[in-house]
Amino acid sequence: MTETSLPPTRFAVPGRIAASNRAAAVWQRATLTGIRRETPHAATFRFAVPGWTGHLPGQHLMLRLRAADGYTAQRHYSIASPPDDAGHIELTLDHVEGGEVSGWFHTVAGPGDEIEVRGPLSGFFAWPGDRPALLIGAGSGVVPLISMVRHRRARRLPVPLRLLVSARSPEELIYASEYGAETTPVFTRAAPEGTPVGRMSAAHVAALLADPPDGGWEAYVCGSNAFAEHASRLLVAAGQPVDRIRIERFG
Image 1 (cartoon, rainbow, N blue to C red):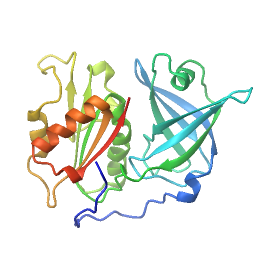
Image 2 (image 1 turned 90 degrees about the horizontal axis):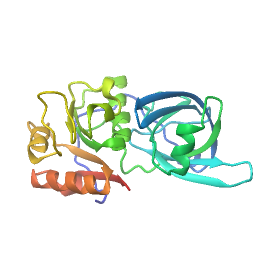
Image 3 (image 1 turned 180 degrees about the vertical axis):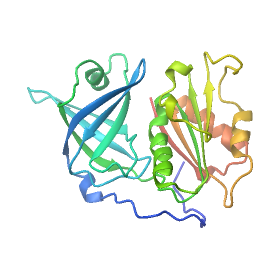
Image 4 (image 1 turned 90 degrees about the vertical axis):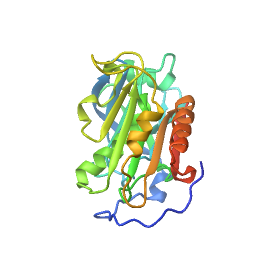
């Protein structure tokens, strides 16, 4: 999908979120201050970054690990924290089997460890809170979307927002304790009693698109290649304009 101009909106953003392009080009030291377990395979890592000048919900950063012998490993990760969390950022990482960086975080890293970060990066997937947002994510694809949800709550924005998040089971649902009335969970392998099991369907998407606000929805989809393709096809079939679907995919 390509970025296009957007229609006018009656929703205003209270205050301006700063995201410096100049700062995004500079590597900064980030100190790990806390680790919070989200699921058996995912955890949130909180960093103090004194020089962090802000980001937009949905943006990501480049992370760099440096070994004592000079070897480095770099990865892109979405930012989970809202932009108002000054001087700190949070990243939620799956423990990928054989993953060089995620393996270090899940088995070695501890408070006080330092890494390097550069960002924020990419404005295409960002949502500053100025228009109705329809969010669809699967697994760790919910990470940039939770930043949007947290931003809306922190600023008490009146902008309509709906989130559909897909997970294998309730135990694998990242940020499970944070979801409210805006969220529809879909479980593909195991679900609570009385909840159907299966992939996100056309019925799910139709319910999300029901009663559209003035100006319609801006859709944000994040997940694996297969999930992103599936979700975008369902959205288009349900009438969502192709040029108002923003996709971030991995894998």
